[in-house]
Length: 428
Image 1: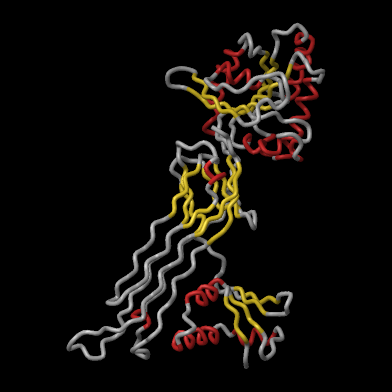
Image 2 (image 1 turned 180 degrees about the vertical axis):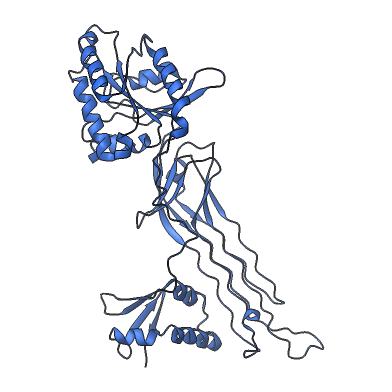
């Protein structure tokens, strides 16, 4: 299966159904009162984590998701049917961002976890809801509230216990293939591994952990050089990092310098990731030239206060001791682990900004733009062809003292005022 870890989609929640304007008409019931029912709620668009999905490949071909609209209200105070939600299945580790603002809307790290990324509009009220002691026969009803719509950027951050990092061709793929059922492509050229590879390492019948082979990081990765910029995000969720170096220095690079360069890239990308526990693993000790570099690598591990293992992924020398140590370390420290998630920045949909705050701006054509969530909803839901509906809107306009605010900003007779998708000509 092709591995896709970033995608862009459009989502549109359902509009609320329109309220009904009607009056009771029955034999022997003169002057029947208003009996128009409310419209139903539009469907939400919801992301849901599915254990059977491990890539964002589906979103390469399906980029538009639209929820159904709510049903319209009817006579005899019948409510419109609420629409079903649009459920979008995503893999564990998916982060959803608003494409326009970069705002994080959801960070999904548990099977079955859900997040609403676009809210369905509420149904418009029928004229029966507007009956009062002073308004005995209202003729107006509300349109349904429009559902939210936005473009989303979906990013997948793998959830693995152990991440393998290091320069290309140091033997990460060989190690993961020797300890798990994963079978990445292995060859002696850079960037053989073009996608992250997950492997399950079994310690016994009951214990196992997930290891991720992160594609080769190189100097400048945090700035977008090589493949590192695309795949650094996959290191964020790992509990433990195995830093693999080529002890034999086959390509002429210094393994000690490689270690420092990769850690500089991690620190540039995220201080939290750079502070994650690392184990220095010197690979390819089956080659004669590796013996020359082992003392320097052991000293590097001591100076860095990290654990050191010398292994050969090909002959399996030292691999069992490494895997046992990793398993013991996870048993001891996994409960303390706090993943690097974006929860501090995640938008909580149930907490809206102050909906009473009115912001008045000017556009390039010197027209006035009024921004206010409640007003924009009211405009969208008002039937301006109905005289009573228009008068109700004018009353709300007056209550919010908008004329005085517009005059402060210099509005003149006949100038245009925008609220949501509607525009009005202002008159004294």
